[in-house]
Amino acid sequence: MITGSISEYNRSVMMKDSFAFEADKIHYRKGKAQSLIWQEEDETVLHALPEKSFIVHRIDSMTTSKTGSLVLDSKHVYNLDPLHSRQAVLVEKTAFTVSFYTRDGDLIKTFDRLYGDDSQEVYDIEQLLAALVHKTGAWHNSYVRESMEDGPLKEWLDSRDRSQLRSNLSILSSASRIFGFADTCLSASRLVVKGHFPSLEDLESYCYRLRECDESFALNTTGVSLSMYDKLLAKEAL
Image 1: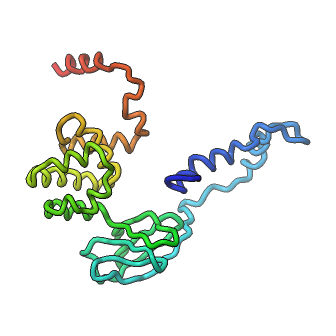
Image 2: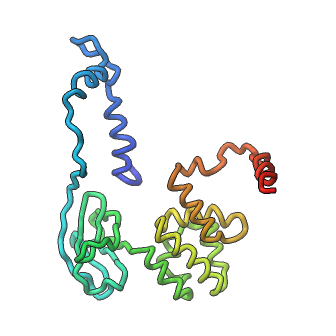
Image 3: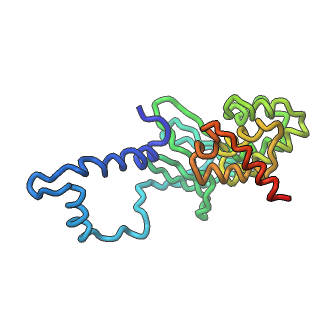
């Protein structure tokens, strides 16, 4: 059973396995590895790829509801920012995503496309987070809180008073606009275990690290003590 992103599975598993399939098998007549035959014969006549990718998609014009939502495929609800209520928007559907644009072509939001027989609903969670900064009293019953995994970040935010919560949510919102809700929350969860909520600069730095390398590389999974490097850094700072 495939879990997670189908497009990522195709890219990292299926394509890799397809190219490796019988690559070292000796051709029955030519006596060479099949991968060598491809390199020698096929590569010489291949054309360069087009400069622009071919995208299989469908674009429709639709009008949002009074709350800024649209229903696609007769049952799945996509909720945009209420600022876009009762507006004509362009809807681009691909196999994996649904993107909404203004009539001028400016991107509003891209969602993973919803599938299945049961009705589902998805929200522009970054926008909900931004609105929550000004309505912190709604935190405990919010979709934003419900979407967070149980753990140190949610526990931290639950324990804050209204002023502290507003400050923390504001930092999360600022980072989410750049890195997205999921990576921002993951980074913040890693940092609050240090006993304090991270600054925006620290949070952005960790998000950049997650973006540039696999999460496993960002953690010391070996258990090896790195304290000697901390001492060297302290001396360098002097």
